[in-house]
Length: 575
Image 1 (cartoon, helix red, strand yellow):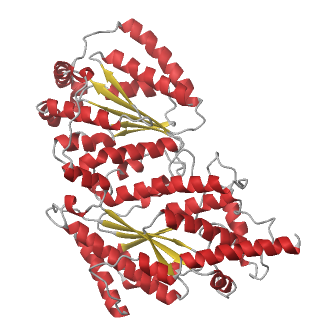
Image 2: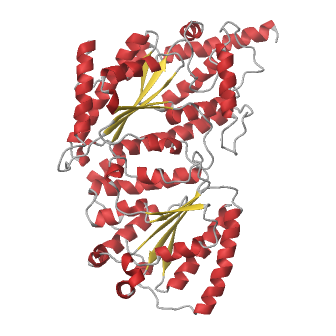
Image 3: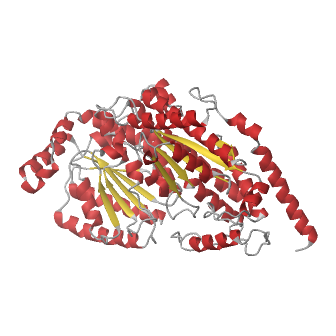
């Protein structure tokens, strides 16, 4: 490399470094901090320690009230990201020393490429804190995002780039270790080394991912999980000095070589793009690790106090989401009920014809399933009680290898599920490339639509919650589809007379009696309410990403064949 080209490259790095310093300057940071009315002053160490542990136990107590409170306990998720050697570990260590460590959950990940066929947030959903708990999460989905962008830029591997040779070999050793870890990723769709992309391409990717993550985090907040996002920053000189000290370096968060000036400059450029896109980051100056720890603990205290305020307010009073504001101002408008939900023709398919068609369609579906090359598929079944969901699922999976799929029979949530965001129990059941389980097909008998169906009709959810859920569900499904997952949804409809006949048949048949409950009989009294809820659901969640297939027939055999036909059609169209 010529001296001039080296000089030009160094000038570019210096320009980016100056831009980063200007953007992350203390004055700019102070302007972005939002004062908390409960803690606008700076506490000394003893006062801060007492305030933290007091808030921690008060937050936990909101979940333990007996009987269950009418308000909503709120959890706190603290996302920790930023420059390497900027004091992140010191800050969290200090926090853990000042609170009850048994009640503070800490998780840590390093950046990896997004896993195949799933949104970037999905791999992290099991780590969500319960309502009333506090959790600090190093790395999280932003580590994955930043790591992937750095790979797109082409700076995840500097083996061909001249890097400073004064880091005592630590940066190179960590880089080699991290590259070996990258080679073990399960994402078959992404090579270990990406060719550098034009700036517009990685910026568009970054913006799209940040929008999806912002919506995901907004839904967390609406479902009583407050999010605090802390970005730790130091300048390039401080970073260089700390890399050259005698302390052992941790495994680097984003799997890049921090000893290379070009990498640091590019990372700051990406970070600035992210921080500008999302205005809710708290920027912490890590030049003085002790002071950074104090600042971090103050931010956590304010966030815990904010969660306490949210817990003590009625649900409709504490959310700033556009969806909730709209629900408070605009009355809910019921959708027209489609005729196919109320006028169902009587028909019956000959058993021999049914058996012949069934075998052919099952064989075709099985062939398509095995030709999908591991792509994730989610089947969602909803419908009136006794409409044939279980029978349709049984015929669908009959030709599948039992290792290929999981069936989830969704009923009332358990207590620990209620202590998480509403969609959490479905997030954690999705096909996941991280697990050792080879199944990549999930079949839900009852689904996330329970919030706008049974929870709405039986008044188990506040109107604000179930009215907001339509948009939350649409975003959830769109994220899955955008990541490559197939989402195939069915609503099975029968008329009221046919339902009564099937109930009586279940009651009189010993091996079917377990299917019939007192709730099933009681729900018949609210038939019209359930039909209206179904109409509203279909009108608001029949999207391009995940359209509904309505199977309206009193003939079980026809219903099963229609389900298979639609599954075949969707797989043929999307694979």
